[in-house]
Length: 200
Image 1 (cartoon, rainbow, N blue to C red):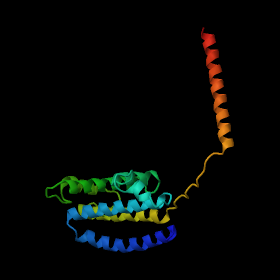
Image 2: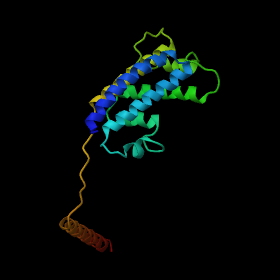
Image 3: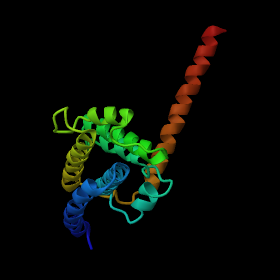
């Protein structure tokens, strides 16, 4: 399967997954909703990274899995922004969602979207299309779906760079480089010598 076929298969699979995802967000508990939403966005960013870099079978191992540089939600958010794949306000909302995820994931106490700190975070999300009087959970899910559409649009339209072909300098180029360095060294030596002479 070539890269184009992989992307087409990905688009079809994502469309099916989104339908399931939307239904799941509604049926989950507050904790489950937050964890599922963050996980889905995290995976969407992973797919965006995959489609934005040179195609290589080792890309997941080298960049996206385990302890690799782009294995975390936070690093994927930042990289997507710095690659110009998402706007700054989307980056900001993704980090808010990530922090909400962490509050639910790391806190064994019974908390919900009505918990003050989480509620305030939800109402700070810029991608919610709801009026302010809607519930924090409604703001959260609306923002998640809005951001997801941005990530997927960026993924679908992403053009990965071509792999640079193997290249190495010729023996002639190496010789010219050595001569250049010798000339520079000679000029620096003479310059230092003249400076020492003037100061003596």
